[in-house]
Image 1 (cartoon, each protein chain N blue to C red):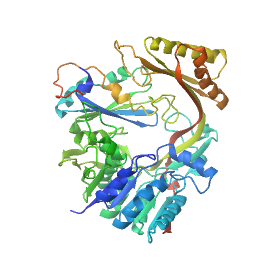
Image 2 (cartoon, each protein chain N blue to C red):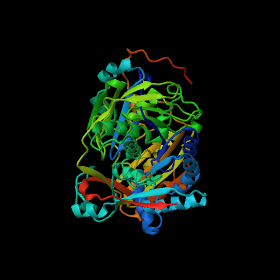
Image 3 (cartoon, chains in turn brown, yellow):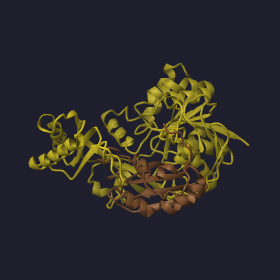
Image 4 (cartoon, one colour):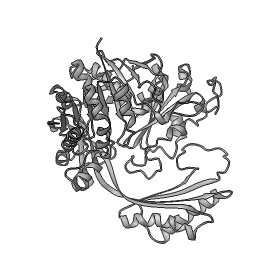
Length: 111
Length: 445
């Protein structure tokens, strides 16, 4: 299944690096996310976009992971040639990541 | 336990104005903060001030103060804002003028200056944070350098009886932390309290981003009434714990999910959130539902403040030229790719010198990053070519080569658009805090 079924995410920018929070809808899924959404997998997912290292910080108290993607924004918000200079949409990209189909996704009314 | 209520009236310089009025009228607040200064904004403001010495403060300052000043004066709500940008003294004078025009008297307006450290930064030739090199490598093209000030001058102004405090560059959370330090008498070496107050400031500083803005995702995260999004306020207690909420009847939501997203926004190491007043630790922050549209925030701490202050340096970097044109229907993607190939070849044939080039298909690969499976072909795409050049003349030629696809390119190209601009970029450095001398001046309306 897609990561989007289990987690929500938000991107922030600082200089030429981007941070993406990945937050479990159900805090009980934190351990699953910590196992399957690693810094290495995020780096591979964003191959070609991330030029630097990827760091991961764990916040089990709120069921969240925080990824810091270094050298990712084409020189930073003020220099980037990208359409999305802040990288705001990177969170939506990351939620497309495939994770094992073992967890129960929250019930949703599809619109 | 004593508490105060602080509202957040803007999350960036162009933000909506009515939600701030709603906070004043229905929020039962004692303080209203406006965060209006993005990284590059102050460099743009410095350019504006060079053109007009009376200007250089936030272009929406008048509109914002005209909207909230009478309500704030009537209720005794104090305002703290970085709308002073490159000219806090000029901004304070303008606020005094607006007050007089509205028939408000007796307001004391403080202007905090001293964040402009261009001379010190040039003299010290400090290393750049984002890339190798030093200030000298900017070759004199720097036009502004502003240190991120902490709470001290804002607290001093509040102690002097200021009703309104206008600053230039200060750390965004400091706009909200300063009233807490003043009201609760927190010591500037009580790093645990300063850390907790920084959590509150961080949650408030982007206004609508914690009340359901930058959040909604239909079917996954549904948010009601975003057109009337309410801006947040925090009820903060003397020990630094707080409740985040919003005015009754406003749109949006304050939920665990919205607060978690904002807690981590623009954060790197959650244990070391570097601020001028404290190194805040967000790792122990605890969030708890506290009724409808109310989330209680507790925990959080901090350690000793850094010896250096971060400085944003604005400089004239390069030029960017850009062009876009759209294609529709079956075969649109193939025509878009053909269009990009033609522009790529034309830029070579005509010798446009670029140091960086980017070719996007909007609707396919302009935003999305990551692996792609088999997608249905889009019926509506837009190509975008962007390049960096050393001169404006060459930047203009990039957009021209996209525009000429109208008559020389693939079938059915429509909606061409082009642009060329000089890049005012920002880099950062650190300077010893002793080099920064803040001053406060006052206007009385």
